Image (cartoon, rainbow, N blue to C red; front, side, top):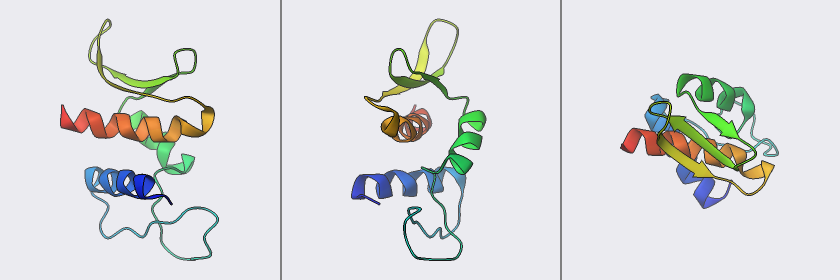
Length: 96
């Protein structure tokens, strides 16, 4: 996990109230409890909980505050960056 990804994962764990998480990427050899919000098994429920929408045409993840305005958003340039954009959007929404 890169330093940027680790910082995002720690902030999401803090927002979600995850106590003492162990972070790992899927290719690590560590076996045991782990918390990886970049994994879709965690990311999907986070999207529902925080009402995140992803627009692949405009390459953005966002939360609407009403029908015409966005509460927050994050951009991505390729499909591999979608999880990061979603998590950044959640973090931004907590700062508003």
